[in-house]
Image (cartoon, rainbow, N blue to C red; front, side, top):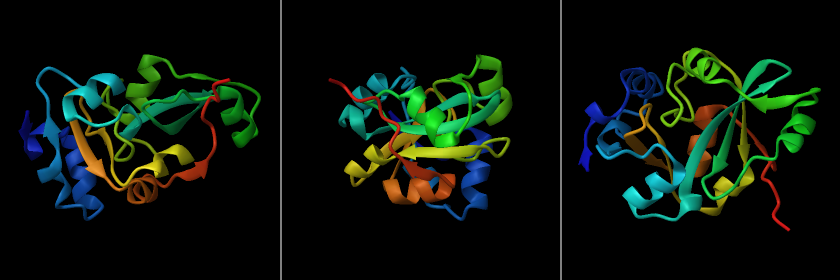
Amino acid sequence: MTSSEAGAHPLFAEALRELGLDELPSQVRHFPEGARTAAEAAAAIGCELSQICKSLIFAADGVPVLVLMDGASRVDVELVRQELGVEKVTRAKVDVVRETTGYAIGGVPPFGHRTRTRVLADRSLLDHDVVWAAAGTPHAVFPMEPKALIAHAGATLVDVREQTP
């Protein structure tokens, strides 16, 4: 593991500068072995799975929407559909994720995207003092207080977590 701005994707590093988060690049952790999935990231960092913030792109009636979810949970697409008041919500295709965000799946950060999209953040992220999110590559993550992360993402706080019986 290494810590450096070199670990963050250049597009994300630029977004951090624009947001005035100049201290954040020094907190980016780079894992050469990868942190592509929430489980890989949690294992590499040594934190709980629920402390990982997944950035997931869905298509809501064909329009991309970002959902921020804790790493231990799944998104309930029906709850997302209801929240957005749309007819259909599906996982976005790989090319749509790349076009919308500027990043590959497994490295999508919660903000600093190529285009502006509607953002929903599940309330479960607030269960922790710090969460970890992708820094634009499948090998880099950064820590942030959940309320600050949600604010920087311009997210609406919602309950869209799949409930387990």
